[in-house]
Length: 99
Image 1: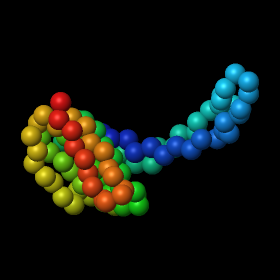
Image 2: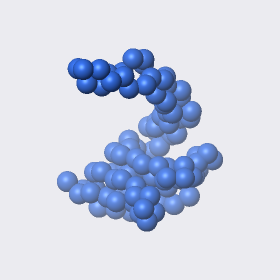
Image 3: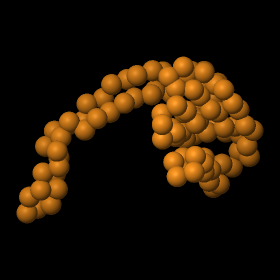
Image 4: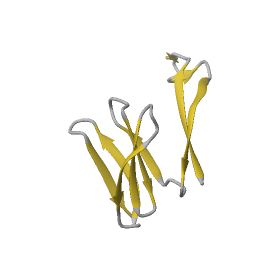
């Protein structure tokens, strides 16, 4: 099984404007929230705007996980050529791209 690490991050810095342009004064703080076990390595993933769903693209399949329950609630077979996905909050749409 492969793992997906769900990590939350927050910027602990403000963008400082100077004559040389923007720069970051601090580092980013990371917190691991959960590891999800998958049968195959994920290619890409996205989350819904409301944070209720994690959409995972694997070779030949799209998986939908509930958040925070981390359970697969839907599977959709796909052509293995799909290699990218994005989530559009404007109309609750998952967009998949072919190589």
